[in-house]
Amino acid sequence: MATIQTDIGNLLYDGIMSAIEPDLVSTISEEQREARYSNESGKQREARLSRYEAALDRCMNFFNLIRQGQVESRREQIRKLRRTRREKESTERTAEQSSADDLLTNES
Image (cartoon, rainbow, N blue to C red):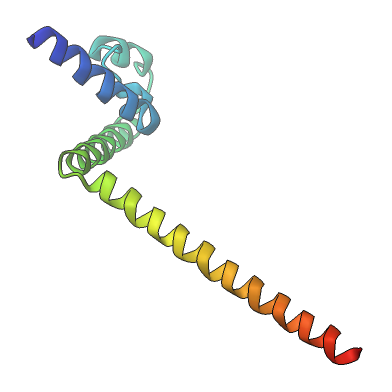
């Protein structure tokens, strides 16, 4: 069971992290990263490590949103906003059409 949970966790982590910072997916080892950046300057290394820290923070924030159910809550909010916007646009189109019909009727 722990292996399945680990596999699922790695898939989820890698799916999120690949969009944020591909260097940090679980399939790339620390040794591979260090070899890839072996010629970078100290300043470049510090910038990369800062980027990694920010990426890990973003990833953890996303995990927290998932855990708290915020993602579904946000989706529902977006759905409501879209529904409200569509209803408003429909009402406006109906009003415009009614105005156009009135103009045509008055011209006759």
